[in-house]
Picture (cartoon, rainbow, N blue to C red):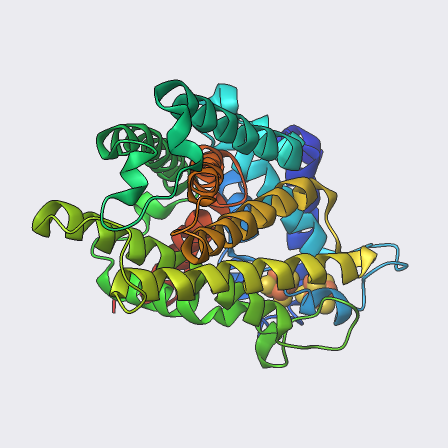
Length: 371
Ligand code: SF4
Ligand code: SF4
């Protein structure tokens, strides 16, 4: 039976073809988790291929090591085939399905249109309520809420964030069931811990130890470093926001806070991470060897990086100028980018972190059992 009758899409077909060749060759089995996971299978269902695609971290070591890479007639290019399939999984598992192509196809345009619409909405909202508030100086606890009441802010951001969490949970559930996670075993505590360690260290982005390849066949750890800045920058910003919420509701301490307050320290460090990491990854994309660049993820990845960078930059600008008359406008712009980021989370590159983590948990369960 032709592979196209087994798999309905070209990306699945190509991944199936390459995994079948690699499973006979097995030269790359020490490079990352993909090849040992592949070796546990003789045939590849669509779920298997989606799992393997999201287990791949795109280090590209297997492309430069491959004796069957183009111009060989087998034309084996695993990083590109799995990256194209990953982009397809983001559409395939998106919930609700009607939104699936939104950010994937028109990444940067849709994301920035969303941000600018939100900025315009917020400025309009404040101008309608009190036009003077936008450009007047505000200082001391509660200054931000002269621009937008705290309850309005919480209702707006809470509703969008809750929807994003629900949409991502539904997507992740579908991915987990489809890729075999639900049937992989009972307790997952040990596997969860291994997956967290692999995620926290980005172990699979190290090309088997030599480093990640981007510009050419020479390995470096640059992409891994920029990924770390981005990942931990995001987590620090999340920790800052969570702590501020706790301060507000549990102790009645209102933002903005002083420079030495842990909310500001965490937010400042996170903001720098969200500028340095995405800027490094955007520069790495520009230098990427065209042979290992996948079209399917390009717009989506660039849009996500710019959204993160803009969120970090506008957050730091707000921090520096929060006691000046520019605060109102900067707050509206920053909130616009944060809300735009929330809206795009379930339908853009952000989901790669969720699926990759789920794939790493499943890999740990398959490989090491529940130990
Ligand atoms: S990528 Fe090439 S060298 Fe590596 S396992 Fe596959 S066919 Fe073999
Ligand atoms: S993680 Fe690297 S070595 Fe492994 S399949 Fe992906 S590109 Fe190849």
